[in-house]
Length: 465
Image 1 (cartoon, one colour):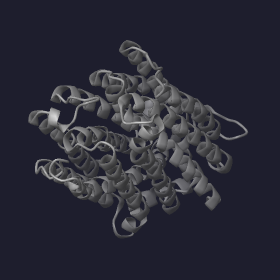
Image 2 (cartoon, rainbow, N blue to C red):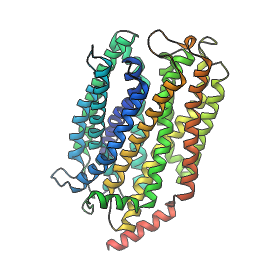
Image 3 (tube, rainbow, N blue to C red):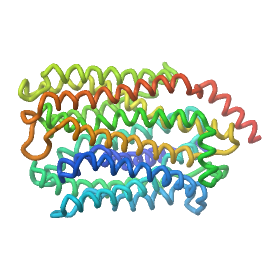
Image 4 (tube, one colour):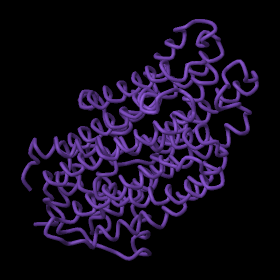
């Protein structure tokens, strides 16, 4: 197979920017938009997102089957990427464009319908997008470099809504009241949707599929059997759930922490998010340097332990009082230290997980005698969304249980010490528990180190001959 060209790498990366820009806007702000801006009960929002994940358990694998069965003049993956992008962009706008004057009951129905549609249409393009990596690269260094580049670009996409949303939304809405936020979110979602279509169109036009002839399709029962027979893929899938749930829980609650604990929802939150996004991107860019010195498993352990250290530091700082606006206008900047550890570690893990999944495809080919790109990557799409669902569900339940007073007119002075204490523990201790479990499970059970992957590549090539 010919080496992937620079033009294809850049175009594939642009696709990652648009794709993750959309995902992060939804995963980080869906709870805030419906709960704080529209007034929908937080626990209800979390429940809807979890119900959508149950639906995805059937929808995402089915999409893997459709991709595997697809044969067209444009290839197996690209038609789905383009069609899914256009549909998802339309639904994205609708998700953040709840009609003005609609009652709470109507907003609940709107959320349920549009969020499920958003998940379905996102699956249409996300599974074939990541499934292309093994189909356009050779295993080993080329695949690692491609995964690293794509994840770095995805990090840029994730950083854009994290950094800009709470700056652009008040600007587009004409003010900082929740009524203004409602308008601002609608137009911000429209801008993101348009960019999404442009970025994926560039990807579809420029990236050529090279290695898809040996990909087989299976029925649902056989597909699940194939997945469960790939023990290494299952280890990675469980790890993805744990790692991403930790991060998404933090990203959903940190805006409440800044608004109702620190007392600065816009400027400070936006700067902190910008720093966090930059830390993620830096980690992805430096990933090749870490790989020169450390094995993949050791980079994983280092990144996860770094995140845990960041969460412990964040918890300790939260109880010092120096972050509050009343104590110091810029006291919250001390959070840059734990923020760096958390987001830098997350950036490394994002790259590693994609590489690990790609490696399990080669492992599965040797073990089960077939390449299951779409099967494996449909599970990645499902479990990443599952992690987001878990995080929003836990965050929604937590906001109700801890007793935060949210919405127009409420700030740190209106919160009880007990409520703020519970918020701090939920956004730090729960992620720590998830990361500790992930480290123990992965380091003990994952076996596809560099030596083993070289052996697998040799055996596959010998079999092909």
